[in-house]
Amino acid sequence: MFLEFINEYGTTILYAIVTGVAGYIGLCIKSLYTKYVNDKTKADVVKTCVKAVEQLYKDLHGEDKYNEVVKSASEMLALKGISITELEIKMLIEAAVAEFNNVFENGVPSDIT
Image 1 (cartoon, rainbow, N blue to C red):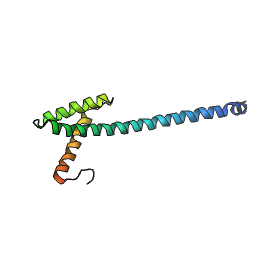
Image 2: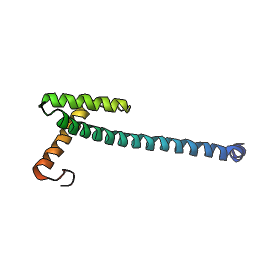
Image 3: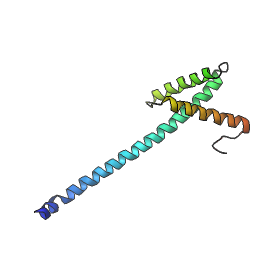
């Protein structure tokens, strides 16, 4: 009876299992890709905002510039449907500022050295 069941429904069951596994793998790949793209987008947006604030608000200093970058980057990312934590934005701002300082001091971006 068991062999008869396997002979009749075995391939259908196997197709269902393979389809389920392939679907799960597809969702995992999509999730990883989305995370990578969101992280890259966050870094690019923050870097752009740091550059813009440096150009637009020359009369601001320190905390005021930082707050303007946080506000601008948060708004831009929200428009793209990407959420960002306060810690993430702080780290990305620090990384962008460090890269700009390195360029000003050495003339070479930090990711090349």
